[in-house]
Length: 89
Image 1 (cartoon, rainbow, N blue to C red):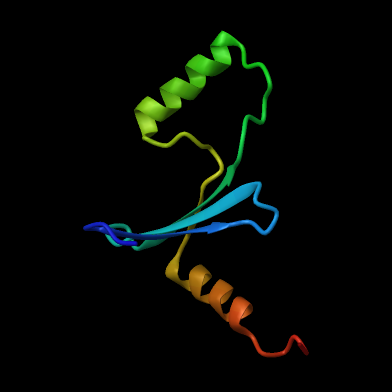
Image 2: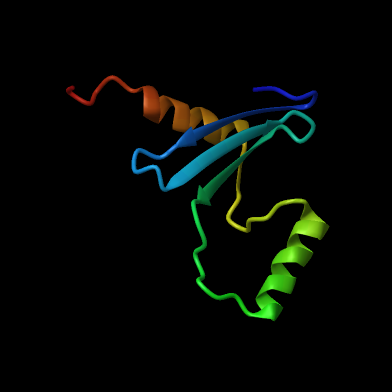
C-alpha cells in the first residue's frame, strides 16, 4: 500500500491477536515499526489515563507508544535475517 510520501505494510500475527505495521517515511529515510494489540490491554482506565491517551493522540497523531524507528541499514539487516537460507527446512 502506498500514499504520496509513505509506503506501508500490515501483517497479522499467526495467533490473530496482534498486528505488525511497518511504514517507510521517505522524507526522513526511516522505517516505523509498530505492534498493535487487539482489544483493550487495560480493563478499566482511569480518567487521567484516558486523558493522557487522548493528549498523545492529539499531539503526535499516533495512538501508541511502542513504535520503533529503523534506519535503512537496520531494515536491510532484518531483511537478510528473514531471507537467509541456512535454516535447514
